[in-house]
Length: 271
Image (cartoon, rainbow, N blue to C red; front, side):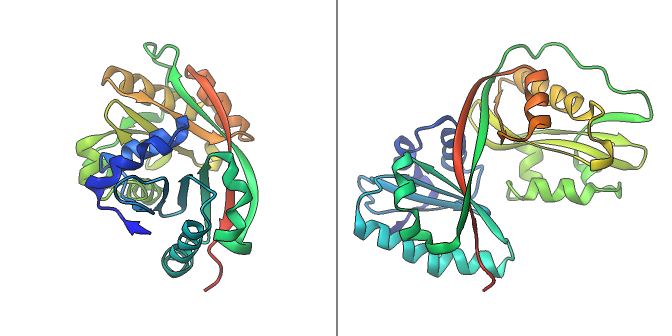
């Protein structure tokens, strides 16, 4: 197996052949999502493995025993030890085609736990109307440098969300955007762009538990979507299929073109 430089990663795009994987690979190719990528053939790759923290992507030909042995070695000697040292705990394994499900034990051993259904929405029906902000003292605010440097409660979680998908705050602020809902001196909901490439992006969103089921996430997500479309960016909404509140928010703000898919959940082990 060979490690690719970022400028070589465009060769793997044909194997990322589902809506959720295309969102990811285009961001990797554009250099917006840092990832390590390996292929079995530099000139004409048939199999690729990509890793970016808690997410692992496995695509292409699942039937080559020697390649699968090489994938196992990369996981066991590089990915797993680093996942343990960084105390990441678990990983999400995305794969295509489904035939990989018969080969995963060869590569990941007994570390895979269970499969989970996810859902991605790839387009928005209408984003022109703003959703009313709940009564004061709640304030809808776009993320900027001043906010990130503030001492608002929970701002550390917003910083962690951004740095989980971007190399720096400066890069995030320069290349994309996000919105928060503030309650006095606390950030209670945030929505940020992730997996960004030319003309599209994913969405990371979270609401503090005490403020859930109050319509706040719908307001923040709605403003994010409206701003994205106005900026010429097509947002994608990706969530657990069983996460009914997230599904409801997505559909309330106009997301359509739904695709369900399956991923595996695994553990990096204790080290």
